[in-house]
Image (cartoon, rainbow, N blue to C red; front, side):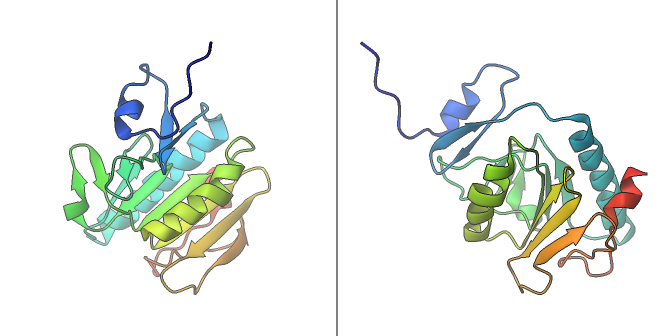
Length: 181
């Protein structure tokens, strides 16, 4: 006789996963994470470097972290995510374990295996948790979906050839195609 499956998981369950197994926890449900492809890692690396250099040059108090980096969105035991890139501008949210609360800007690199999460579950979760800005970069169709949850000024879809300024850093211009060349 099969044992009943646990319906709601906690951060303890995430920490109990075998070494090397990555997963996220959203509203008590575990979502396993597949290993990323090379284009995914190139985008994460280039964006982290580019945005990080901007933050440093402007002497901003923000910090940028690529995955794996723990984000405890609702500061509870039922939510733990590892966005591809997190920008946090409130140093009080940071401790030795990660970010307690919402990052100001989250970037996810979509893949066929993560589209449902990135465009659905995470979009809703990030908005309701109070993230100011959320980007979904899709290397397959070469688009960037921007969600400006704070002001709704730049919400829309852009191409890799578009010059884009993040809502939280209006004087930063990013052109994804330039980062990949």
